[in-house]
Image 1 (spheres, rainbow, N blue to C red):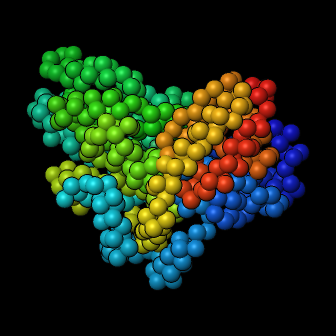
Image 2 (cartoon, rainbow, N blue to C red; image 1 turned 90 degrees about the horizontal axis):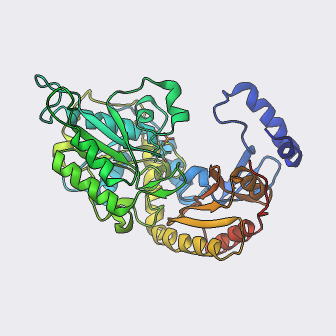
Image 3 (cartoon, protein in one colour; image 1 turned 120 degrees about the vertical axis):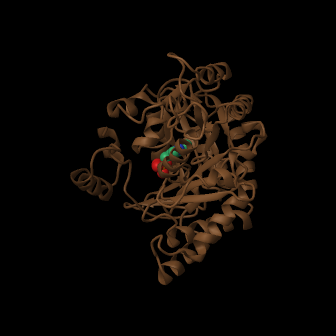
Length: 431
Ligand SMILES: *Cc1c(COP(=O)(O)O)cnc(C)c1O
């Protein structure tokens, strides 16, 4: 950790961070602050410093901190039954699955699998895709068949577990763990010809590869710096999947649950071209801070590929998590937060574009998943400057700041964030 940061940090923070590093594996680097409690879009550290939170636990805290309805739902469920195992079911779990199918506009016969994180949602989707691949002509286990393939996109991020990591592009985080799951191939994001070529490699004979079981992609690549892959590209991917019997898996772990100005990003024509996916994965924002995730399989035929024993998790669909998610979805609906995400996002991007800070060269995103591109690679310095001035943002790439505030942010909150961002010195040194 840079010493200049420690100097400006309060004494309680510094004390706890010293203890943190004694007992935590160093996979996250040194945390920026030790946090204590929050309310709405604001959070306080252990020294009593207040921050306006424009990261929201990485697009997780949809309702901000300590929303009364969320707290009530979680407390009441905790007092009834926090967990029951999957030998039993609970009402919140059943209601939540039905609600997610409804919000996704998935057809009758669609089914949900619950996990506890984004990676687990994607693991489930990849396993379902593997079962689907085995039904395709020319694929194993038919005689003379070849293993079906899964196509993933360059710059895509799907999680850190070994399956999800196998479909995650960033070499620095993937390479040390190779060999990973075989028959997952990367195609250039946004390049429809490259995707078509990858499909065309399927064939008989010595050089032909197995059929494509699925294409997995984000519609806005969040960890890559909030980069839309392009509606025309997504539309073409849908066509190619249809022609070849492949599934289209849309990873909505970061884009979903209202954040991009619609319940799911695939419902925005300007992101998806109006396609319908076969599988949608979700997590981050769904539980409003409670670990929850999973996937929706569209239609009964696909859903039926999972049978008892195919997949599972001890905590899957846990009633505490389900109640947290139900409360989150119901507040998003009652407080019109999907529309708020759209309006506040518009305000935020316009505010940044017109704030006159020469550090900012462009701004992009949809709803409240946005990024501002900087004139030079000083994103960490810019993030630290904002933090010192009471605003939490995220250095998502060396030269971009990600903005993903809670969906409850007000017009005033956005104005306040823009005024802090406007003040970031344009001559910060490179990180
Ligand atoms: C965060 C993220 C994941 C991984 O979610 P975890 O809950 O960290 O496992 C997967 N896909 C996308 C698009 C994400 O943004």
